[in-house]
Image (cartoon, rainbow, N blue to C red; front, side):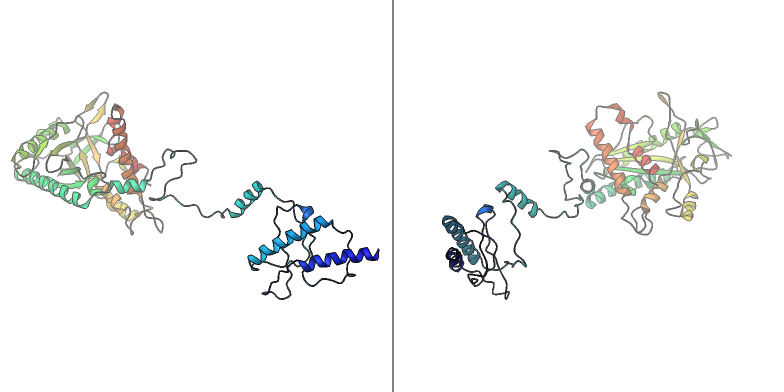
Length: 436
C-alpha cells in the first residue's frame, strides 16, 4: 500500500512540476490560478490548488488517482490555459483569497451572448427633449405620430424678412399719407380724421409675408349715446346726446341714429376718387365685401399688397357697461396700468350686426385694437412680460401658430364654405379670451 501511495504521490508531483507556473511579479506572494475556458466540462476541470513548490509526498493524501488518459488531458488543458495566460500577460489576474468555489454550469453560446449583451448595455441617461433640430419620437410607429411637428421650425419659417418689411411699409405709408392729406384738406365731414396704425403688422404678429396691412382713420365725435343691439355687448346704435347746429355728420342721420352704412359709403367714395390722382403707385379699390367695415385697396406693383382702411369713430366717454368685466390684467401689469388703459378712448367701426340671414347695416361695433396692441407689446418684454423669473413668454408665438393653422386649414379644405366665416380676427379674439 505504501508503494502505491508513493507512486501516486510521485506522479502528482511530476505533473505539478511539469506544468509551467504563472507568477505575478507586481504583487508579492500572490497566488494565481490558470484561466480555464467556460466551455470545459466540470468533470474535466482540475481541482483548485496553490501554485508553488511541490509539497512533500506525505503532506496530503489523494483519495483516488486519476486515470492515465485523464491525467494527460488535464496536463494538456492546463498547459494550454497557462500558455494563454502567459501570452496575454498577468495584468488583471487577481489571486483568490481562498480556494475558489465550484464553478457554475457552463453556459451555452446563445446564453453567453445574451449575458454579454446585457452587461454591455449602457445605463439609462436623461431623455433628450425634442428641440428644433431633434426629431420628435414616433411612438414606435413607422411614421411620425399626428401632431409630431416642430413649432419652432414653423415659427422660423414664418419669420418676416426685414428687407421685405421695409419695402412694403414704405409703399403703404406713402399711400395712406396721401389719402390722409386729401381727407384733411377738403371741406368735408371727414376733415378731422387722424391716423391710427393697428393690426398684426404693427403688433408684430404678422406671418408668412408683409402683404396685408390694417390702417384706421379715426374721427373724433362729440358726446354720443350708445344703445346696445339685442344684448350683443359688441354692436350698438349711435346717437348724439346733444347735436349742435352745423354738425358735419348730420347728413348721415337716420332719425336719431348715425347710419353706419351711409357714412361708410361716403368714405369709400372719397377714397375711390382720390386714388386716381396717385401716380407713383399702381393701386385699385377692391369690390365691396358685404358686412366688412373696411375699404380694401390692392397695390399691384412692385409686390401685391392688400391695405384695409377702416373708418373709426373715437369716443372719449366712459367705456360701455359690457366691458366692465374685461381686461383682467391687474395681476400682471398691475391695477395702475389697467386704470390708465381704461382712461383711453374707445372706438366704433361700421361693422354690421348679423340679423337672421342678413345684416343690420346701421350698427357699429366696439373696437379696442389700440388696447390689444398695447397688451401684445408687453408680452415678451423683460420688464412687463406676464412670466416673472421664468421662461420667456411665448404668447405672441402661439398667436402666430394659431393664425398659421387657420391659414393652412383654409388651403387644405378650401372647398368647405364653413371656413369662409373664420378669419384672423376670430383667432385673435379667442387668443385674448384664453390669455390670462
